[in-house]
Image 1 (tube, helix red, strand yellow):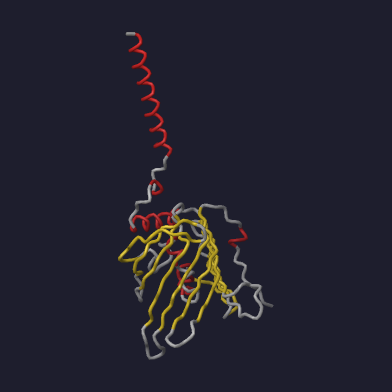
Image 2: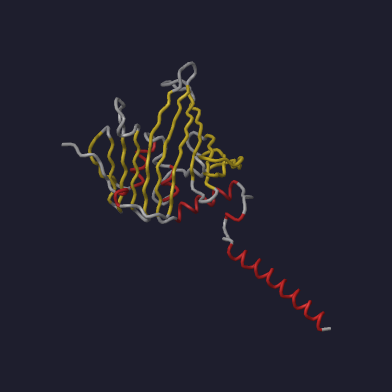
Length: 260
C-alpha cells in the first residue's frame, strides 16, 4: 500500500513540475506579434503604424534610388542619400543629399529640415539661406517631391497629427508576399496599391523583429501629357532604422552651411 502511495505521489509531483514549467514558459513569452508568423497583411500594417506612432525616438540613414524609364531612351538613374533624427514630441531633423559630400565633379544637392518645438527651419542649396517655416508639416510638404518622397514617408508615421498627406501604409488590396531578407534583416513583405493622386503598386519590407520599414518599392506610370511623353518611375528606398535609442545632440543640430 505504501509502495502504491509513493508511486502516486511521484506522478503528481512530475505532473506539477511539467505544468509549472509550461506556465512559466508561457509567462515569459511576450504577448505580442512576435508569437507567430501567421499574420495577415493588415495585421502587419497595423503593427507598423503602432510601432512608429508610439516610439520615443527614431533615427535612420538610407538611400532612395529612382529609375526614370521612357520608350526608346536610356534609363535615367537618380540616387539620393538621406538621414532622419526624431525625439518625441517635437525635435526633428531630416537631410537629403544627391551625392556624398566628398564627391568630386558632381553637383551636390542638399536639403535640410529642422524643428525644435515651434521653431522650424529649412535650408536648400538652390536658395542657400535659412528659411523660417510656419510649421513642420508645411516644411516637409515642400521637400517631398525633390526628395523623391523620402522626406515624407516616415514622418507621416511618426507624427501623423502634424504631417499631412497619405501615410505610406494607406493602401488598398493588401497582400502578404513571400518573406525575404533586406541587407541581412528577415522581413515580412506586404504589397498593395498606395492611395495618392497617382495610385500605384507598392511593397513594404518590414522587419520581423522590430516592425520597422527597411525597404519600400514602388512603380508609378505617368501618362502622356502635352508637356511630356509617358514614362515610368521605379523607386526603391532602403532604410537602416532604429527606435527608442539615445540620439546625440549633434544628430539634431541644424548644421546648415554658412556662407560669408
